[in-house]
Length: 261
Image (cartoon, rainbow, N blue to C red; front, side, top):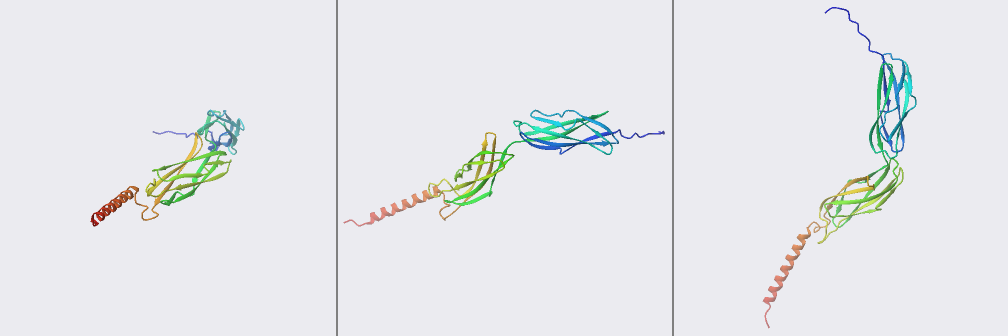
């Protein structure tokens, strides 16, 4: 096939780039993103913006309703995103559409809504305690995103055995602050002890409200503190019964051999 072909250059166009393209916004506050409109393929002219498209609980405005773009000078506008104080935490998208003659493009900004929160940590991940002794760990609670209030501490042990206590059991946090509580683990020994040698998992939970709680775990290893400490209580009881039986038998035999007067 012969002939003359003319390759047409791509038509003038523009791009819209948000910076940043994602925002993390605390409930009841605002954040901004800069939208830059750049020339593509020699585009030059005005670009008009539609009202930002927002989900329920989020409002957004633009610093200008349109910009003028040249091949050497981009247009810039600022997107202001406001999150309501009761907006549910989660992920959302705010979109802005810019249009010019024959061209239309949309920029999306991801919005992550966060609320007041707290962190919980331990100064150690594991603790070794001799049977019949006790050990301690320090629990630190830290305010996040402006959290202020009381955090109540509880603990569960699996399997059952060591006794757990907190000092204090309720920790008061101020916005941006931190506080500590002493976690105490006590083990018991003896025939009627509820604690045996081995490993235990302590799960500590801090609760500020029905919908706000966090947990952390501590591994406890209970070791032998004396040669007899590792003997199960049932074995000690059986041994005691056996010794008593031997004593009775020996006493009976001695009495039978005692000469009669």
